[in-house]
Structure formats: C-alpha cells, structure tokens
Image (cartoon, rainbow, N blue to C red; front, side, top):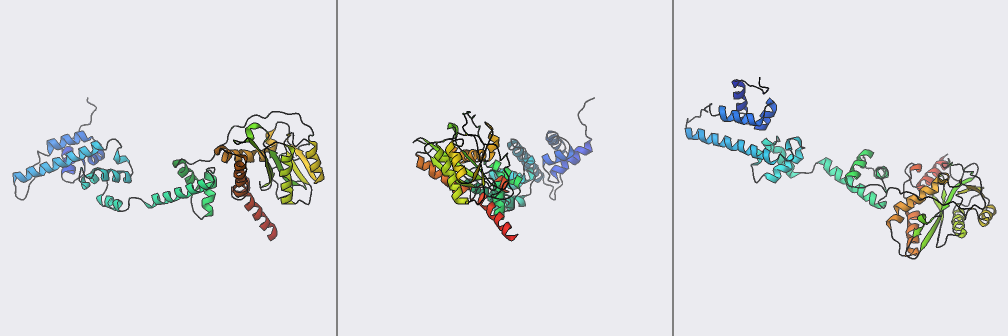
Length: 395
C-alpha cells in the first residue's frame, strides 16, 4: 500500500474553492490543509476547469478572461515564493516582509505581495509612513548613550559601569539589555593582560606583613588604630612606562578605604627618592594625626635604610608583603594593571613630559574623580569619600 495521503474528490474540490473563490493564497491553503503546494496546483488545474463559473451574461469570453486572471494570480504567487525562498519570509518578522515588499513592488502588485506573504496591505502602508518602531527608536537612543559613555571612559568601561552611568542620568534600562546592545555594537571593556614574572632580589630591611590583606577598612584613615594606605611602584621593566626618550617610572600611594590615589611621583630613574616623593605628597594631602600604616612589597627602595628612617621620622609604620607574593599587595597591583590596560597600552609617548601629562590626567582627572570602582559600590573614590563624610556629619 502506498504511504502517500489520499484525499476524496469532495475534499479536493473544496480545497480548490478556497483558492479560486475565497481568495486565499495557495501557500496558505496548503499549509492549513497539510498538503503540498504542488498537489494543490494540480487540483486547481484539474477541478477548476471542471467547475464552470456562471456569470450574469453567460459570455464564454468573460469566463476565459476570469480564468486567465486566476492563472496570472497563481503564477505571481509562485514567482514571489520562488524569489523569496532564500530567506523564507513567512518565518521572518513582519518588518522584514515589509522590506521585501518595498524592494519588489515594481515587479509585482503590492496587494499580491501582501497576500502571498501573509500581511495586510494597510499595515504595509502604515509601515511606509513610519518604518522605525518605538522600540527601535528607543534602542537607537540607548545605543547612542552607551557609545557616548564608553568613549568618555576611554573605551575601558564594561556593561556594568555603563549601566550605572545610565542610571545616573535617569535612563531606565536593564543591565542585561546594556550587555546585549554593547555586544551588538562591538563595544567591550578593556581586558587584562598576563603579568610577567617578578625576579627575586636580595632584601635589606624586611618588615612583617601587618596589613595581612585587610584591604577593606570600614572608615577612612583607620585600620587597627592606624591609617591604611598602600604604596607600590613599577619595579620591573615590563611595568615601566616606555617613551622615545627612555623609561619613566611611577610610584603611587593609595588609600585602602576609598582606593583614592593620595600620592604619586614620576621620575626618569628608579631610586628611593621616587617612592619618598610619592609618600611625601600623601602626607601633605592627608596630614595624618595618628600613626599611619604603610604597606609595600619587598622592593629595594622599600627595604633601604633611607626609607625606614623616613617612616620613623614621620610616625609611619612599615608593613611588607611576603616575598614574591603579589596578592599581599593586591590593591596597588590592581591599580597598575588598570593604568596599563586603560591608558598606557593605548599610547605611544614621544617624550617623558607627554607621558607624565597623560598619566596625571588619568590619575587626577579620571581615576580619582570619575572612574567607578567595584569596591566603592560603583562610585568614584572622591565621591565615595564625600558620601561617607556626609553620613558621619549627619550622625
């Protein structure tokens, strides 16, 4: 027995009437009845001619003209479906089908295209007047704002920080939507890099690790009754700032509470004066009234007698990471990798003065005052400290 479906004559005749009398397209009738368009065309050819249409005049010429018109309609539907097979318009969104109709309206009548692609002609004409929907306009607006904030950050912000910027200007948008829009536009955060291995040196004066990775004090200038600050410098060639004039070395002092860079120094040589100047700037800015805890690695500048004498003279307590353990000084390491990937890696400095000006702009004009920090609840270090001071004054 054949496995193909068999339909009674009555079924076939009624199916043909759905096309010839009801005006439905062949593809629509075939899809609804569960048969193929090839079979339906064969039924039309067989049964439509056997069903003579009665007209008011009974003129055979009128009947022949009607048959030709029907044949033209069926042929046009076939050609339209054949032309649009490449992207299967019946499965595409309505806007895509409207666009196909607009591209082919000079080849076939608009109403024939609409009926074949299962859309109403009134909807197509409305789309012509306003082809961009409200949702699409909103998407374009959000994409523009996202691109603006991304460029203002120097191309380093990811979707989480961009979402915070949108919230600050009162733009309601989900964080996942920001992620999708940035991905669609090819915008992404600045990724990290592989840090080179450090070379072990011979230490001079080693202090204990008093900080012990307590990187999140509950209030500024306080950690075990002492100010909590971290200092580090670029101590290996891979972390130095390259210019056409030569190397430029940077040292910073960071407050653990807000991650604010309170002191920095840049010189052409990596000497003890480099780190002392950075620490001196931090003392001028903070003017601590109690003993200050200064944490560093075991670089030669920090293990020198001159460094230890300076700490003792200014009532500072020394704390050092374990040898070769960068995680004990993670805050400073994190800052330097941010600086490198967000600014230094993108520039080729002609001179040390150009590099010094650019790094100053990054630290003072962007990082301290504008850049959102994850440990600060996505607020900048300065904003985080101001908010804390207001809360303390209210209490």
